[in-house]
Amino acid sequence: MAVCGGSRFLVRVVRRLRVPARSTPALTQLVRAFSSSSQLGSLDSFSSGQRRLPAEKSCPSVGGAQRNLSAVAVPLQGQRRPLSRYDLLDLGEVEDNTRKALTCKHLRRFIIDPNLAGVVAEHLSRDIEDGKAVIFECNPGPGVLTRTLLNCGAQRVVALESDKAFLPDLQALENNLEGQLEVVHCDFFKLDPIGHGSMKPPAMYSEKLFTDLGISEVPWTADVPVKVVGIFSQRNERNMLWKLVYALFERLSVFRYGRLELIMFISEKNYTKLVARPGDNKSYQALSALFQMSCDIELLHQEPWSSFLTTSRHGGMAIPKSTEVPNDHLCLVRITPRVDLFTSTVTPFNSSTLVVMVKQCLAKRRGNLIDKLNSWSPGIGQDLLAQIGLREDVLTGQVSPDQYKRLFELMEKSEQFTQSWLYSEILENTKNTGCGS
Image (cartoon, rainbow, N blue to C red; front, side, top):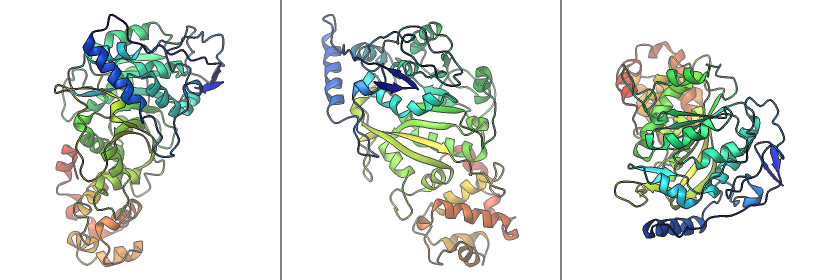
């Protein structure tokens, strides 16, 4: 028996990963190389040390076998969309998926192996079974993960695809279903660009996207309304993280609609920095403190770069260089905004100042925190540190995210900071750039 998306299936996996005789030699060689490298040391769980479930215990779609859904499916409790009455969607062979993905001419990574798509779906099984949140899939490309999520019982998937070349196949799939899939020409990473005026897809305002999809704002303390699944764009991964953290603290853009959860592949290098602890001067940075302060971060899985198909102008896997931390994998990470992020003191209206404060403090991680505080309001540093329980010689890189948040709350309540530099200078410029250390 296999469990996926709340339904139980008797699974007999049929593998059909073969190279037809009509294949071109170059493509055949690429597929064989990709397949062998994917099977060698991939699909391990980084956080728990456990290997992935075998195919016969994972989603019924793994391996591309087709079975009649209506004959074996158990209806989900409270489902918002009906399950398909048709046979499970064919995930395609690696060669066919490779050929489709290679139509992309710029740097992108694709999931083309049904086994890897099955691993991702396994980590989403509880989300699919719960069925309360809409799933946004970023840049699905050939749609291998899209079909896997649908086969596992996902009730509403929104495919946000930036490349027009992949839209016809995705739209054909949408038309053959009963509403479980919606395809939008949109790049999640280009939502709400700086500036005003008319917007041309794939760039888009989040307000238009959510309005067209019929997704309304919910209170911050409500359940997660949307789960965003995909692979961070390598070209602007770090800048995108900064853009998200600003939007999160100010409840702007996609976070205007509630606590959107990210379930994304991110480079091992940037994941290491996101979860770095105080005292790690190489990796603990402002981005680390801000994400840990605002979100729960869970590592679900790590996968070698070779398991993904990479398209680029120069060929190769285009792995970002890293000298300070390992960067051998892409890490599947669940980032969930905390219900208690906002308090009576920390609000969406003043939290941008908190972001600036943390950035300024951690710009030099070996500096004395008391000196930074006294530079903003002379003589107040000793009193603030005493209230938090920190030594006067504590370094900025030794202060935890929660302590920075507590420090900001004390500063907010202090009249000595009302006219401080922290509340006036540099703030606007930092907000506009969205970049930082």
